[in-house]
Length: 349
Image 1: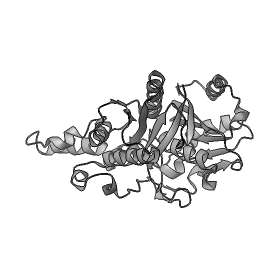
Image 2 (image 1 turned 60 degrees about the vertical axis):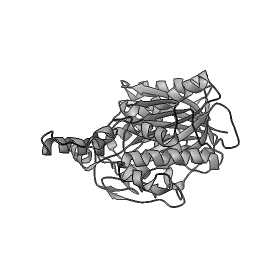
Image 3 (image 1 turned 60 degrees about the horizontal axis):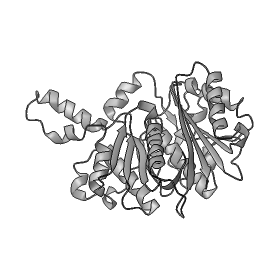
Image 4 (image 1 turned 120 degrees about the vertical axis):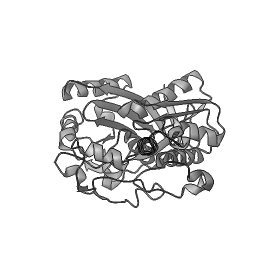
């Protein structure tokens, strides 16, 4: 089953209204979201009660709906690994400091993983299918596959699908203890050649439809996941098989967009397959724009859709080779800790 992407919306460390003409650069060990003015989508009285990740999700979803010229989707599907971390932390902190007494329910209500999808539905008045996938680094891909299945059942539907995650001071401190992050500058991150990367956060949504229309930006041709492959060779075999199932060879891919993040331990996987299976093909990256988080592939997909729609790849995204003069097919290959590999194939309309 294929689908056409008719609208996109992203809130990330980059300002989506000027990216890639203007690229925000960061130095340190994390890339925080460049928060837009949420009042253009959310009533100011509601903003005060919303956590950051909820505002990010609601904002990105509204941008994608506006981009698609759609006021009401038939289904809302989200993916998230961490959920509403900030509200969870607030509730647990009050639980301890107030000795489980006189707790306000707001933080608890907004601490569940499906809060964002529910809030989007409430604000839109959408009573259709509503689902949230909490599958770690596969959360986005499961949301996309669920959307494709819905469109297969009823091609007349319009599906709002996306993914989001936030990072808080608590979670950043905990994850830093595992040696996941390092201080760097985004310009030098991908070629740093040392362990660790920069933490990130963000939200991206897509309006999917079974039929091509005037607003269609790209075609979502295929989505697949690979869990714990035994070796780079096995991963290469899975990628080649994925392409074959869509009638393609590696040479048919105009641009390989990888989840390279500057961590030498994980980037070795990309190096191996880039030089064998995709030898001579242009390679780009996206995590030096948004940082590393479980659903970062959503930003990569948003960036790839923009490139396919405009026919131009940001020069700052290129890692190997030159940006292709003609862009027809983009393969997004992302992995987290070399255990969760995902493939998203996009084709120009």
